[in-house]
Amino acid sequence: MKRAFLSLFAALLTAAPLLAHAVALDAPLACNESAHRFIADLADQQLIDPKPNRVESNSINAFSPAHGVDLTAYGFRVVAIVGFEKDDPMFRNGDGEPLAKSAYGAVVFGGTDKVRAAVTQAGSSAIVHHVAPFITAIFCKLS
Image (tube, rainbow, N blue to C red; front, side):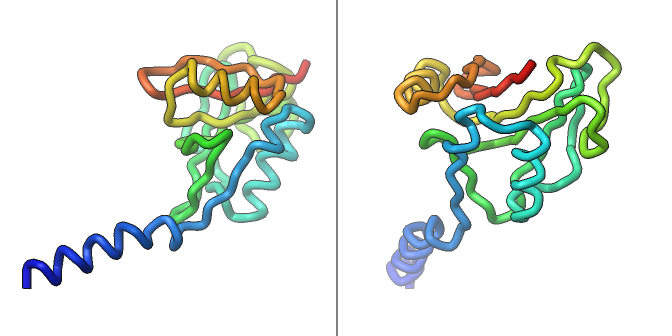
């Protein structure tokens, strides 16, 4: 009985990635679109919760990936999507100075040096910023 349970558990673990809806965000993180388009496209595809779960003082809005959706950026698992566009009702304003007129990106689970190397190798102009141990932001900022 125990062996059958372990075999079933192993099979479920192996199949779990196949059950999730995986989407790579490499192309939009080449920094060639607006924050509105980036966030709206993800929301329209139901890949993120369309309402931000957090708004920083610099007006950066954080959105959670939708339940059951596996987002990646340059091979790293996305833990949050961030964005802001000035005078756009899709985004809430923070109580401080906005970071930029339009900015967006992804927060990923991965070391800063490895993420920076992957972003550079892909030819993206995204900014790579250390957030916490093994948490890194990939960020596109438009003036």
